[in-house]
Length: 625
Image 1: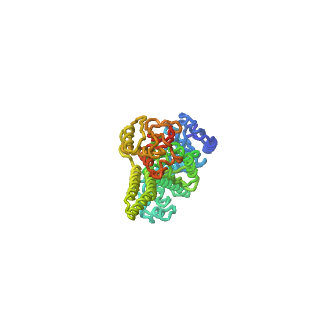
Image 2 (image 1 turned 90 degrees about the vertical axis):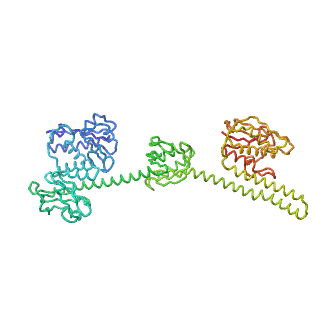
């Protein structure tokens, strides 16, 4: 005798474990000997990446083990064999892949399934007729493989009836489903049009009672007009019924316990299939909802897995691409930390990763790098499982950069308010008290000379108020800028200040992008500071020099800007405070002049510095580049 595939049949196990192939070969050999079939079955094991196309295509049955590597290898060729998934979970991704023809969960089930598939002549080539009729258990195992491959409820009903026609060729079969208060036939054997099958109310008839009670039965057909005299009814779950019917010609015979057990086994396979489909549909619906939420959330979001302690990107939404500037193919499969974590935040990111892998839910404000520069985010990371070791989760980044900038602006405004309150409460109170005192003296003595001193105090108050208004204004934007000559503006500012016999020298002219009025005010305050505080006496000579060009910082780096330098007595001991509002070394000073100059510089985007001059005086640099 020959096997269904001739003298030899080949089985290729796509796994690098030879023990499985050996065990399968032994079981298949024993089955062939018991069936007196002289045909041999050869089993071989090979790692998916170690088998060539010709060997893969020449196998009669290909066994895929556990992971998807075998499936990916099968996809790469035009297969001619049958694919059997040897897995524990019949609802997993491997078992439910469209390439899989059958599923087995144990070595015995695998050998029975493979033996039956070989005997059924599943390949589309000319073969010898099987040497024996497959047993019911072999047919049911093959039917289980067919049911494991279906993807919809309707397919499951049709596949069940098709299997029943093979397992119970002497009987007619039907699948009926509860619809409200009725049990409706939905699929029947090819010899029985479903339109000829009667529907019954739940609780009546053999099908209706099976739905109500959940009990299987063998009973006479209560319909006297039917050509079937006996019906075997098996409930499937709560809402489905599988029935076998024996016709009245006597060709079908009577149902026995073996029929009942086989019918119940087929019904259990159908129930498992329906449960799998229901679970799959539920998971698919949940996946689709989660995907819709992930895709449509307005904030940047990523799905990640941990690999060797690094969060590897699995997916990003459109908002992430728009905010961070990275296309999905650039970051997917990469560590997200390598792209968006600033160098000074690496320790913070490491701590965050450790907490997430412990299953903690993290929410914190962070700074992250985009292709346009750093921005501030509220980072909310949700691991898949809380309070458990985790390798996956989701991270959502809510951009709060604008809010942070508003908060910083508000903070600076509040600081200015504190400055103003301090100056008003302290500096204005003194000249006001002086003015009030001299006015009282003038009233008491009638000496109007006291009013002149009161007027001096009022002038002092007016000067303070003007400086305060200027300081408040310089905290805002400078408005429109234009190209201006430093030399021209410096000469205008020098002419607006009472400089006495001090001299001005323009050492190097330059063109600046500036608001002309504000730049003039900046220079006026610096000039006034040199004239009033740069010498011990107004009669001492003083030279002020102005120039534009390349400046040098402490590291020797060249930076563009301009400077004002005098040859006076130099900076005070606490020179780092000269730009603070209210700081002055003279009792008559307001301490606001250089603070105003610094505010004007900052509004232009420049940086102000106070240094010792080359000739021992003071040098004020304004770095513009």
